[in-house]
Length: 481
Image 1: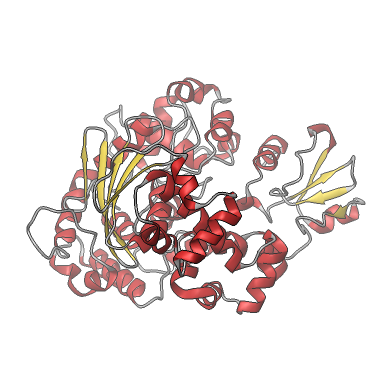
Image 2: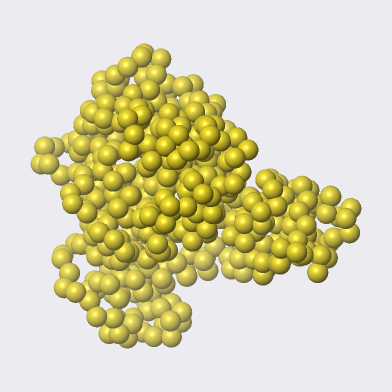
């Protein structure tokens, strides 16, 4: 990466680039990680070094706030990066509510005491306090957006009692639950249904997301009608039905839950699917600066990289679609999805789980025997806990685990990285459709050194390339957009 690319990363404070270089500031004599929360220094005062040792040799000292001298993979490094981020993601998914702090610590490979110290040092609060804050925000959302009784809201938000819910809401918001509710006008609701408006960073390419999801909707699991996207979702306490209106602006969500305790993980997965937490202004600033992309970014601002709502489903999508067309993959995936149906009432149902696919997937899968065996083996590994597809998993760790599996090569691993973990800087050099899109835009392929101009947002560049390819007769293989 050149100076300009590194400076963009520093300005965006993206933790995914920690460990690749350090930033030294001549005006302070301090060097930091790319993600340091301190104020972005002037370009003229910045020097970049490949390692902390090089910055030390040049006379700079380590920032006490972001600990840039820590070793990647060690506790002090993970304190700021991977472990704290994963802990927040898991807390947001409701793990503390379901499994307690020991369950959270076990997932992260720490003792409860180690994890408490780590989060207290990095985030200023321990896991219970972070979970409590998340519960308060969930309660506030339900109080202001629904007419649910306070007892049901306390349960959905993860509180142990109504009293605990009342006390926490009053402490956090300085208002009693009833006062919060009285200040927020609401439309009449449906029994058993939650209606929420999802906040997203603008601009938001809702039409592009809808088109992407519609082209790949699996019969019986997903459906698209007009501006609405619907799907079934498997959650810890049962099945949810998600109904999203992507007409433009903030998505409107209609959610049917089997158990209100699944509200938090449902919202987390929907936001991941929509790439709702992306920073479109940072992405568009970089991509739109290139002459080949300037007009496309102006026409389609806020492009998103669709995520995944179900790890097993995404794994099978990618492996089925490696060498066939989108339409053929969709047909085959529809047959696979039918394995999990337990009735014919026409209601959407989740994609079959990994255990069922490992046992019965051969009944519906078509194609070379080696590929079918690879898919079944991968599903068996997921079912046995040998292959972890959690969306909060570190990107490099996930890619390495995927490449160890027979039948998963670099394209499939990178595509899964893109969809499962939301990695921002993945470009699929072997992708036929991206190559066609590059040709349509007058870009060389593979991009090679030219691709550096789009770092660190090449995943979003890939979405523009796929969009450009859709207007050409180029083949579009498998699950590739």
